[in-house]
Image (cartoon, rainbow, N blue to C red; front, side, top):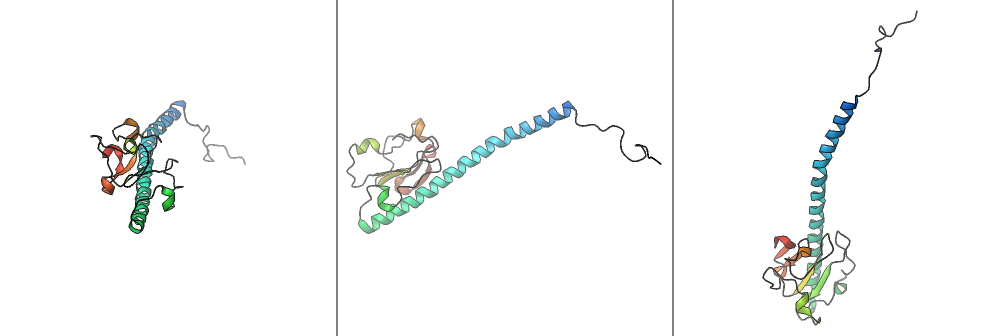
Length: 162
């Protein structure tokens, strides 16, 4: 007593997706990826910048503690045990002692605002940003992504927003 396919509830012919349905599905996935990818990249950029701000805040605190005990700023980040610290983009943080420093050519190395006025008087500390390049004036294209403290710690963030 063999049962035929119709009575067993099995369709006679099963079908897969048509080529049009597959292409529509791929187009939807591509569209969603096109929207999500830049949003994710923007999110990771903000996270990296926030990490750099937090690191610079910690380093600044260590430098200020050094100053409070020795009444002078360190000559390098090694003196505050922060010389091996890397920014989120894999580059070392930059430090330059300004107050009492004896670095030759110091004025050319100071970070400057749009009016070419130094942004700090005590020390310069910054991350060169995602591109790893920087120039003394914050208005330089290579400096726009830098993370900087300015106004002797009164500002801490992206150079392009200062």
